[in-house]
Length: 260
Length: 339
Image (cartoon, rainbow over all chains, first blue to last red; front, side):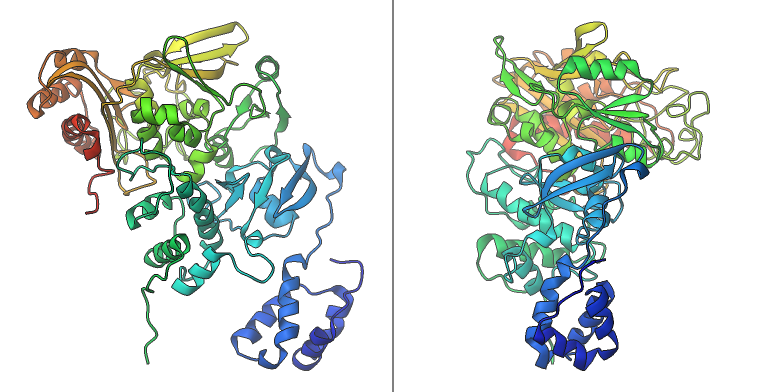
């Protein structure tokens, strides 16, 4: 929790005063927390934020930095390891238990809960993040081994208010249902774009000695290369369409249609 | 999940020394299997020695004898995509790319790939007996659900299979494993690296305590013209092999000058039969001869019920893969490839 009191902008103040007056004191005193964020999301879904667009936008932008997690007391850790590394271009210095995975460190210590814990055993891909340019499983990576490395999570893909093209394509193509695997799917797909650009082969590639050049991925190639990310809702056709659109930059027809 | 001490080693001597001093300390490379086993309470290291920062282990170099040395810390993905491997040892690239997922191949090291443990359900369940996990406790797989289990080289004590794809290609290529331990350095032929379960299924390989794999040497002969890796599994991708076959041929016209056939998913180690390979020498590379070789390889195969199908499947796989090796461009990634 933040020690300093939160200063709301006039737009944010108006939004809280009008829509959640009962929360205003709490926000001013203890900060904009997860519970407020969830309420705000509910209102957005119900279409109640139309006249508060600016305030809502400012609040949503706060969301990623809404929690400061205090350092653990070193004496409380039996085998503590201090790790200096970058997360989404921000330098981080955390003291972790030697057993702590990168996933738990991101979620529980740094407050980035976008990366998901699905199986925690390297079988589902929900925890996929990009470390030094390569997609890896954060559930099977010890934080202690990340000294000096650069980690990109789903929270670090958008630039300012502009989504990463892969995020936009997943939205357009409805590349998810419940959304739990989505951060891992998107991180995986973003790293895949680099692999394809570098001409890296897959098990579905006919001639693996092909000269290194950019590969435009077929549906079969995308399926093979994304097989480490499981989607139990079965949004695979939409995920494939999203990745194709993000890779080619060309309009790919959606697999779904609105009906009257 | 037990507590452990985490240490980093900057050189091989330090790493070996750190392991040697403490009981139950393990080397940590990619961690993709070790952390999984630790979370399941199958392995309980009191300490981990991180070898990822050891200088010189993460390299690949050409050897004076025409071969290639793969550093133990060189990643599986980097190995598969390295131009020398793609061009000279495409069988190895194929086998690596058949295994795991892109994320895991980015993390997993070459040395660690050799040391992964079986995915036998009973081995992975600490609440049931298993001679590999708890010597002398019994093997429920023999009478139990054994669809994924071994058909060759089994013993009364264990019918687990070794899960690697990469190692099937390394076996076919006659790789050498360089290790360093408290007693110094030595080189182990790939065929002698992994072992059959016999009465000590707790031992997967012939490494001595405290020995660290430092590199893997590939001989000059890469079989880049005629090779194929076929992997048959329950899912089209990201699943362990029920049966896999690495075939490498050297041809003189349609005559076989040299043949290597290694099987995965059927035994406690990558399976080769010198008798079958010798049988193929000088013969013409056709379906009939590959079938005869398959019969030799599978002569002593034994099913345990659910895995009986593997014997027939392995024969078909050996034949099909032999034919695909004649024209590597015809390789298809699985049992039922898309159009």
